[in-house]
Length: 538
Ligand SMILES: Nc1ncnc2c1ncn2[C@@H]1O[C@H](COP(=O)(O)OP(=O)(O)O)[C@@H](O)[C@H]1O
Ligand SMILES: Cc1ncc(COP(=O)(O)O)c(N)n1
Image (cartoon, rainbow, N blue to C red; front, top):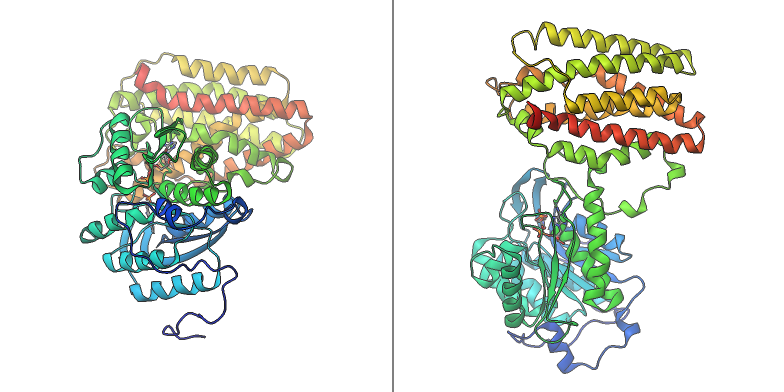
């Protein structure tokens, strides 16, 4: 094993040297403009590689959602070959950053030299730098090596609000800007780099981006992730004539998810990779943005952590439908509705204890009514089941529903005054299940009843875990209810219901499987509406 003091190999010639004579950095001139002045235009084949070699210089996030871990996934997802020089170690999970350790900057410099002495680097992405010494090491390496593409994500504060760059290093970071081709600040970072107030609107952010572009000469990717509202635009800004227009906006829809951990890291490393292949920032962003949106949309599938989870970098590489069980396909279908449930006010208020009592009472009363109808539908599933095991399971579940209904009346509802009427959502949900039971198809009926097991069990597990993580406060008004969510018997019954649905799909025809998905999705939608009903009808 080489000792840590061994210098990087310098004798062997790199496969295609990056090394250019060191030049003083020209503050106020971008790397791209600087190169254009001193080097002949690179031929397309020299810059556009089928598998670009992309180096991430960034911090480590052991939970795998941000930092170099996200960068390597993002680079690979865009067909690049990823490398990583680690600037800092963090103690981090989806809920926050608990500690930061910055190894000696000289050791980072050794790593960087070892890479550029041996490997042609097509693009560099720079993320968390930690402190001024690290910035100085990266700066002198960039000035020496002059990589073809440099994307700088000026990481300062994590999504969780924790600092990732010492305040005293902010000036040094500003000094690094002219060495970048593309700078990708979020709104807070953009304001800090300009030493101005944070933009409070998209037009103001674009104006600020334009000012940063003209000061640095770099292209700025202004990101709309932190804006309010249903859209999530991004824009490229360059005042030097590099783009088709000074400001090129890409509209995007906002994905309703908490799983935005590492979006900035993933975006910047994807842009570095795409640019090394395409040589065009606009084309790169047009390729990367839809990928990022889909990575956010599919993030819940990962089920990582209880805070701001990671995005699904490899959503496009999901196993083909033929390799998945039918239940996996159904589960993927349920994800948007599961996300929607977690963002409902009712669920948030129930979790933190601020839910109005009349809404909780309405919810319980409707649950009791629903269970009665649900029980009849489960009895029908028992009648249609092709196996005795299935027959027994659904019959037992039908009976348990009636037991839970009477338990609700005896305990939870006995001390509450609620209008006993059938609510509109409860009616629609039970009507939908009854229609599925009248279809005559066992498979379709099982798919329709499944979300009441599956989504309820999943939401219950998450809310119970959040309740425990918050210290299970004794004065939480719904603590007794939240504790019922940890019911292992219900979790076991859910697993059985899923297996029976899988089995029904295997026995069914292609048309039946398609109808199962439709019935399942409709029930998922009703699960969302059921949790939202108290807000409208209590
Ligand atoms: N909820 C969301 N829906 C769709 N895109 C999002 C969402 N949140 C962030 N993005 C996108 O993720 C990227 C990172 O944006 P942003 O959150 O502003 O930066 P950072 O992660 O550095 O704080 C941008 O392309 C932004 O448009
Ligand atoms: C090591 C490291 N680098 C960067 C970020 C910022 O990522 P985000 O702003 O998406 O939390 C992070 N949390 N950790």
